[in-house]
Image (cartoon, rainbow, N blue to C red; front, side, top):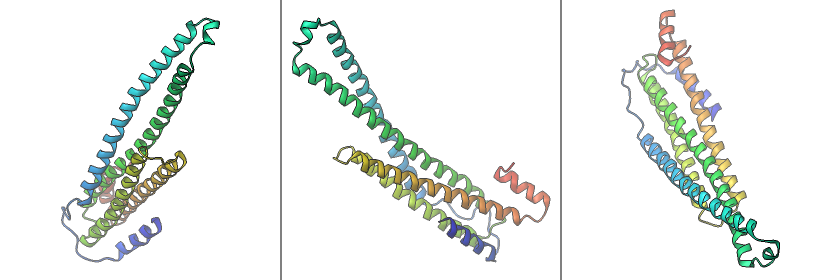
Length: 227
């Protein structure tokens, strides 16, 4: 993806159509899809984490009560402790470990989704600036729109993977397989984010190269927040 972006950036330098107006194109329609899906994922994860945390508290209290009962028993009474009570205590422990493991998964998924949120924010910030930059031609802005659309479409696929992970907790999917999907989704979102930031940097550099005076270059730096 990076190679393609770099090659296509060179094409921008060869385009010679007239300069575009300040408001060249509107925000990409797919953006709202990505935003809505991302918010839905975060809301679902937060809700599930809250439920699991409540369950953790309940299990910890139940386990503590079982331990207190055991600690109060005399040695001869311990041997009479029924198998049912032993199984109950063991069940609390195993369920608690399972719940904590699932919370860890959810927190990892939330981190991935937050990266997706940063990707959207970075896109919006850059896109709003590029559309107002007089150093870019209309055809170049349209090209940027196609690149951004491609990146956002990939983001939708990543969100689909995240929903697949969330659904996996209701199935018999193994932890290994679930972890494999989580890592794959994380890698894909990292790659998309890197592609986006690289493309943005190259566009800013192109704008700087087109500045005709030092004052113009300083204005570009200020415009994009470059130190």
